[in-house]
Length: 129
Image (cartoon, rainbow, N blue to C red; front, side, top):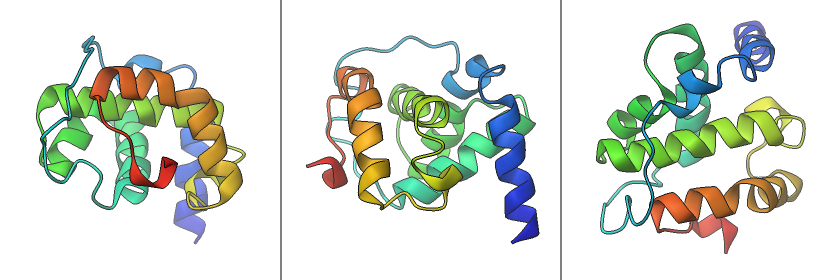
């Protein structure tokens, strides 16, 4: 529990300053995740892991998500945008990553991150529907 609190504190402290490491430098638009199996498998926990990892290394959250989900780099870049948006816009509502299934967390992500993510990925997470 203490290690998770430290990781979350690091994530909060650096999230705004390290936007590029979360988002990556690749600009992708369209249907990057359409037709790719596994893009939303264990999504919330892998997003948290990749967000923290991106802040602690030179790997972007998008690259981490591409590897974690077994999808293309373009799809991973879209997922990285979702990680960055959630980290910047919804960290409080999502209990710093520990309550991703709470309605307030889901609503925050939908309200703040949906347009950018769906415009990039071309898919909708089932928990948003």
